[in-house]
Image (cartoon, rainbow, N blue to C red):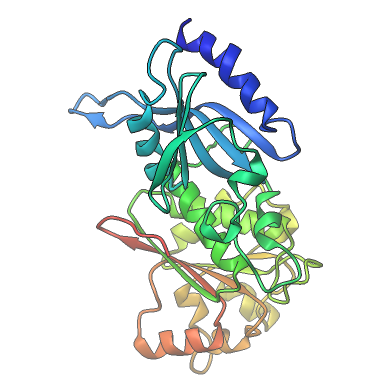
Length: 330
């Protein structure tokens, strides 16, 4: 029995019997692409891509990786791959199996060993605060679950988050669900800060998260950049939102209307506009302090005084900053 037959005849039925792919919002993703493979040489050739045999999802979140081998091999043959993929995807649980035996690794507490049957979705995520199935929140609404129920906007199947983007998005949403007010992501150039900010905004918008956390109205989000070309790029990248939800703020419109526009959901501008106007920081001071959820992009305001006033006036802040070195997650 080869590996494909082992999966179809032994592993798939066993996962189904445990409730995976059967119960609502419990999904089994097969042949899940993690990376495209490292670029090698000037010709642009890639090494072998990282592809997980199975990813288990619970309420919109990846919770475990499974590596399968054919029945005639040992059930721990794929253990190294499973641990590697779990570490890369920041998943708590890794499994190696040949269809007859199952070996489980809990990456969080460094516990591993043989198990007799596949755990059910509820058994696998029975400790939601441990980092697998969500997070506790003092709000009456389970925002972690509500965010998980909103699928990524995949642009008709043409976009899929890279594994590190998925991790960054989930960690920001976990922090929001825990009612943390300031969140920082620092990412290397070219890692997709705009795409990450878009997906976070999409989930907040569709889940109707707002500063009152009542789930009744959609949030208002401000996307700040340090150059007009970046603000315009982000405005175009957010085209999946309803047209009337997007507002591009510029000095001319503020001067013409005499006020900062607030009749939208996602606002785009640059720091120079935000700090402009008659009088010191006039535009900044005319923005209602609790009106906007901020997405700061690329840089902080140029001066320390400006930054202090900016932070003091807008405590609810998400930042995605550029870095020349390795990225880190808040």
